[in-house]
Length: 256
Ligand SMILES: C[S@@+](CC[C@H](N)C(=O)[O-])C[C@H]1O[C@@H](n2cnc3c(N)ncnc32)[C@H](O)[C@@H]1O
Image (cartoon, rainbow, N blue to C red; front, top):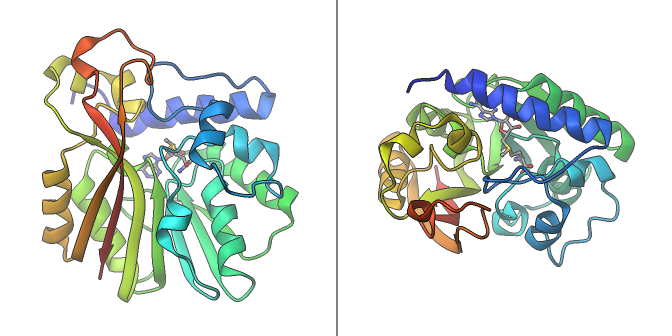
């Protein structure tokens, strides 16, 4: 890669978090994960989001809703990889109740600050936002029942390390239930190597087969990858023909 992935991604999402804090959110055009309120309403259609702070909704950058997919139960311990402004952590905290707990992990200081403020605004106790890389999770082995994540693994420059860390921190029998972007057709190399494409959750997206192979290699069983929606160029606000219908939003489930 011709750029430092982690630094570029931190800069990009740090900028979005600052915009949310200043009340100046707008669509990050050219991106599949977008801070656009109409997309947030679409992704979380049917969910009661009324108890969540506005800034959690405005800071929402996911590509699907991993919460119903994860089928969280009371008392479970959950980890959200790349928790951003905290929307899925706060939703998960309600689902697991006071006997459960949720960790949100993110590497970007500004996102962590936003998420922590949202936690305070919501007055919720069973949540802990921690700083770190998904490729080096700062938690002990076999602590977690369920790993959730929304549009983050595609941003990693070492997906095998990230998914092997996810496997390490899961309890035996624990599950990974995440939403992510998958590439379904080849795109030109210069687009894959473009930092805006990477930060917009497209450049780093891998194929369904590659995702499956990595999950299997690091030890996951009963792997299920379900395509949810295809991104047309209109949806990602671009006129580049080669990325029209090249990416899909998908749900991925696997067990330890
Ligand atoms: C597209 S946003 C998604 C945020 C959140 N999951 C949501 O649904 O709104 C990606 C988030 O993942 C974080 N992130 C990306 N790569 C990461 C890594 N390698 N380690 C930790 N966090 C990462 C970014 O800082 C950003 O907050």
